[in-house]
Every structure is written in structure tokens, then in C-alpha cells.
Amino acid sequence: CKHDCDYCYARDIANRRYEYLPKGQEFDPFFYPERLTAPKNTKLPDLSQVDDPVQRLGLQNVFVCSMADLFGKWVPEEWINAVLNVIRENPQWNYLMLTKFPIRMSQFKYPSNVWLGTSVDRQSMVGRAEKAFGQLRDSGFGGVTWLSCEPMLEQLTFKRLDLFDWLVMGGSLGILLWWSIRLARPGERGRLRVFAGLVGSTASGLAALYLV
Image (cartoon, rainbow, N blue to C red; front, top):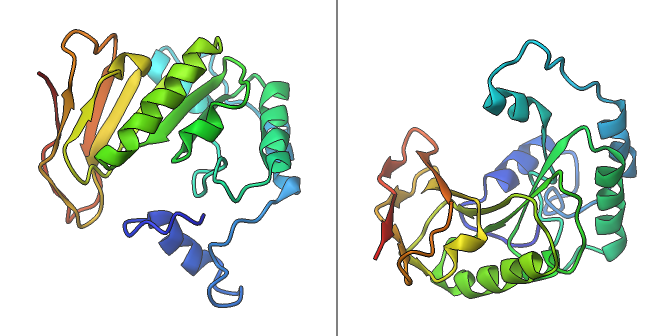
């Protein structure tokens, strides 16, 4: 990934895991085509004895590029299409996707077994998130959409939270969180579900959703 976020946990993991690579290349984007066979070759867990719908869904979830941004401007379109083709061919799984480039994400077509999400940690990112997910809804995407405000680095004000089904917010390791999310237009929260949490033993604070 080339975002170079100060709080990036994935970069720290990559620096340890790929320490055999030349210095400075541990976190460079790289395509592993052999990994595209994983959804087909991985046996779906036996769900017949699982009654909890949340647990059932969790056992089917695949976080796509959990340590990368598939829609980064540095990612070739062929890589993106290769991943999306595998998703379409393996509907037995539920795929979670998250990006800081929501406009580019909105330029592709998706099956219903995809949860599309975007990260927003600063107010400057709100406008393009709402624009992109408005385009996704207008294009006919009827799947789950989600918003990740983790970490939330400042107070955020949204006009169109109704574009999202889930909101994830909280702190990250070593970051104090006292910010809130504000909704500029009361009544437009829609059916938004909120998950608030703190990550890391040194993080502290409180996140809240305010409708004002």
C-alpha cells in the first residue's frame, strides 16, 4: 500500500513478515495470482449446526486485501478485475472490501455477496465517500455498504449517512479518541447500524454518534 498512514498496522506487520525483501520494499504492492484459487479450494465451514446468524455470516466472510487497498491509484485494473472475477465465481463466500479510493471503487460492478466499504478518518474524506456511494447506489448496487471511521482523527460531519448500512468507528493503538460523528441533516441516518470499539491496550476514549 502507498497511503503511508502514520497509524498503519499492516505496514508494521509486513515489515516483520517480509523482512527478507530489500529494505523499503516490504510493503510495496505485489500481485500473487496463485492466491486467487483460495476461495475455490477452501472448504466452507459446516454451518448446519450454527444457529446464530451473525456467527454464520462471520464464518463465510473473506476480507479482501486486508493489508492493502485494491482500489489504490497504483493498482492496475487487471489486478482488480482478476479479484472480482474470482468473487463472482465463488458466491459461497461473503467478501468484505475496504478502500480509501471510493471513487475508483464505484467504477466497477459487483455481485450481491460483496460488502463495499470506505475509510474516512478526516473531514476532507467525507465528500468523496458520499459521492462515490451515491454513485454506487444509483448504479443499482443493492448489497451491504459500510463506513470505517477507525481511527477517527477529528470530528466528522456527514450529509448522507443513509448511503451506508454499517458504521465502524473507534480508536487505534496509541491514539486518544474523543471525537464524534455528526449528521448535518436530521432524519437521514436511515437504518444505519453502529459498531464502536477501541483497538489496542493503550487506546482510550469514547466514540459516539450524534444526530444534530
